[in-house]
Each structure stands twice: as structure tokens, then as C-alpha cells.
Image (cartoon, rainbow, N blue to C red; front, side, top):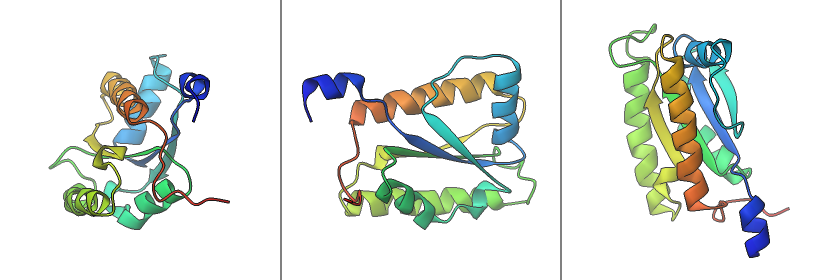
Length: 144
């Protein structure tokens, strides 16, 4: 990749978010007109515990530069322990990504509640900057 291309490159990030907390926090950020990078595309799920680790791997394989999984804070899950299940899956996923040679920082896990629009904005800024620092994904990406 040339220097000129690197300067114009913007990361593509997909976020799997909990319907009850993080998605509501994103909605609050939008209603409050908080600014954050437009690099992230949200996929709303009933619970972060429903995120299959293969979703993350498939997203990276299909060309995403980063993946964010965000759910309710521990103890606040609408499905009792779904977010704790997600945290366990995510810990294993980070080890797997490292094992196959993908930077573990391409996958990020956070907690954002419905009342934290400002935090959602900051999380998106942080994720975008972290993925931008890693550069375009090279490994595991399918070549057409």
C-alpha cells in the first residue's frame, strides 16, 4: 500500500451491540448530537451474549478492519447473565485471534449503558483510533 493510500485510508468497523443498553446509549448520543467518527456500523442484537465468536472472525474475513462488541454493564443484563457469557466468549476469542496471527486489538469489548451517550461517543472514538493505528487488516481477509 502506498503512502498516499495510507493517508486517505479509513478503518471499517462493525459493532455488535446490545439492544437494551449499548444501542440505547448510541441513540442517546445521536439525540444529544454528540460527535464521533462515522467508521462504525451497528448491528443490534438482543444481547451481547448472543454474539457468536464466529461472527467476529467472519467480519474480519469479509474485510472489516475492527470489530466492537458492546453490552450492558455486569449485573445489569436484561437476560440475567448474557453479558457475562459474552465476556467469557470474548476472552477465548482474543486468545484465538492471537493464535492465528491477527492482532487481538482488532476485536474490542466494552460495556455501555443506556444512559451513557457520552461514553458511547468516547468508545467509538477510541476504537476508531486503535484500529486506525493498526492499519488495514491483512490477515484472514478473503481475496476476491
